[in-house]
Image 1: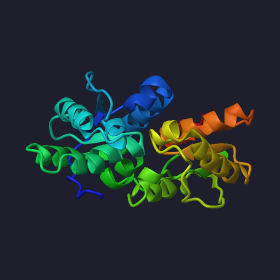
Image 2 (image 1 turned 45 degrees about the vertical axis):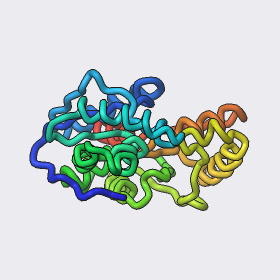
Image 3 (image 1 turned 90 degrees about the horizontal axis):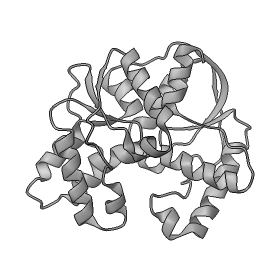
Image 4 (image 1 turned 120 degrees about the vertical axis):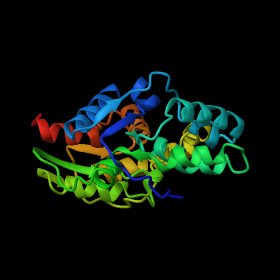
Length: 251
């Protein structure tokens, strides 16, 4: 379920860094903030932010999920857009929260939060109206879409921006809509099945010999890099925000 968006009326945003940036991908957070500031945004970082609540939702512990999401709603109070550099965490707020809070007295508060929560690239293109991207990056890339970005504008937003970057070539590969096997706690609960799915995906992504495997979702990249590393396979990953930053700065 993709929400009707609250209109973006200014350039002040709240940045949800996510657990993945906090623990594994700090440069993704830096890149996302640099990109947003380069577009004229005033980026605020609520210091009390924690997990988005997705872990509780996907394990069926909706009481824990609701507890965390109520905290998220308090921390990200106000009217400013909430920008998230992870499709899965953004979807946790605007989709999973809407489901988990059905029948709860604060359901509308969670829905309102979801209406102003944006995946990073979706916000750039459809929130700010940025349709092209300046700069150059000489690289061949494959785009892993990520299941949480299905039926959202994110993939179209990424391909639109990438298609305007000089020197950047997007490569086709087999089964682009196929899951990589991560699925949140699915990879922990069913590691052999998750690994089989992931290895198939890795093979498809590496087949056209890209310089980078790119995704708007760090959880998928973390899972894929882990599987590849255990097999001694070089697996160069980049988040969309890093590609946009590096193209603009000429890195």
